[in-house]
Image 1 (spheres, rainbow, N blue to C red):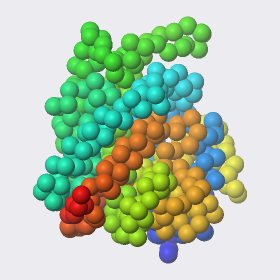
Image 2 (cartoon, helix red, strand yellow):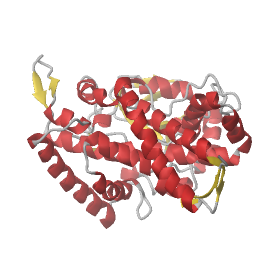
Image 3 (cartoon, rainbow, N blue to C red):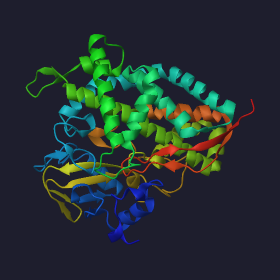
Image 4 (tube, rainbow, N blue to C red):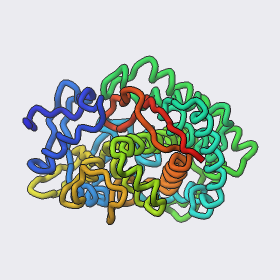
Length: 415
């Protein structure tokens, strides 16, 4: 492969899923690579690409690489394109650095604690049963839309105290902002601008409602909570931090898990022996969930910005340089995973980085694991097998490896 011709900002390279062949070559030949600017690259500025597991894990834990900004930049964040500092970078929870990030995160953690999730499991199973039984009655469905997206969407609405009747509208707005079907990196289409504006307005109204009448939900806890200041006092979150938190949870709470569920089922369809092994031995389900997470790796990359000069292998990353951490590549690293391109529900150990690493380890990891397990067990209970009924349509994005549509036939198990 001619790595000099590789352009990771050309979204057409990601239109059929994550391009693992490119990253296999990068891990082998250029594990720390400076990606030069191309006509597709936002701002005409190159960036560093990390593709090996150990380098990515180390970078994710390095305080010299910021999730907000650094090196005198006016912008930053976790996308390749710079986002405005003080509006997105440094304000969104996933685009903050410690200590503000750690203090903010503490407000939201109780809503996804092990105790809370144990109490929610029966409801999750009941919701999953209703969703799957409706599709089984027809025998076919768009698995992504009707199953994989539906359960996380219902749960994030409950978690944030959003009326269930509004969930599909929020889902449509979030999809519009995350997909690049009608634009390229750094561009804003009319559809994206309209979706952003509508979701922002909805968030303003919802946050105001939580202020007036708080409920037993994560958003109410964050709206009425306080965080420690550098001086040792306490203060509420700003209006913008609250709004950005709402936007983040709508997108992250529905997007990554649905893609892991759909991609995981796709792997089980393609590897029928693994489905049969799971059906015969349910004790394999926990390790199957971890393998689904490794295999799917729904978040393709996160960016960091060098706060100061950083030395990595034989390269010096200068202050202000952009550094991208490609999680699916880490999760296929031959140095860490035996036969990494084999889907194996018995894989152990399985130290995947699907939820990131370090301070920004995914806040909703335990909920995502639970949702995947509940859906998988419900499918095994009800289906003898599942078959693809047409081509899978992928999202066109280098940030989120996702599925738009996945038609399947569900073959009911005889009871």
